[in-house]
Length: 310
Image (cartoon, rainbow, N blue to C red; front, side):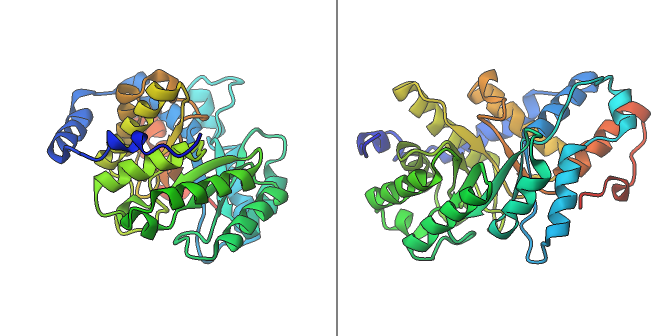
């Protein structure tokens, strides 16, 4: 859609104390136990972008991570949970550009998407032409989803139209691939900036808005998530278009994943608890989910090394 400053007007004021109070009550008002908890944890698994974004990544490490994505639960867990022929896998594997082709080959035909972090991840400070070319190369290598980062300086300067035009250019470069726009919320200083940047990204064609790269000192928090999902709700009410949401960075426990699921269920509704509208960016979350599911079945926690990731 064209840039429309009126979409930003409703987001220029943020009630910080109200958001913090709402975030704190979300985690206390709902208690999910027993079989219900196991079912919600399986939903968390299915909404996961299994991620490796380390300086020591290798093709072999990525292949092992893809193997884990294809078989995330042991046979004993599957039998104990009564899954039968039901296939539950992470929604995507997320990697740096040099490993896109490796992941695409390993996941071919599985239904697990290949996501690439692009546009000079994690800071987004390369020339625009370079960032656009990186997207094009990742798509050509087999990426079906592209996670881009915005230039935070455009937010600080209030250069909303320039930010809009950059995200539009990313959208065009993606072609048929899904575009996930990382705001880097830990760097944006205020929740007002988070809300405004969210709306600009959605106007410019983002399929998802995402909290963090995972490299900031502060990553996904529930108050930030509330600002972003309420921007999503406002955009949907105005346009009828559903935009996805992806919290990332620091979500490493099964309990934390349940908190985010509750937030989405309460603020956006059941429709958003599907892989095309909600994802977790996570690297170690799957291990804790496996341990919690094993505890549900046996009453005992297994050692972390029994659930190797890669």
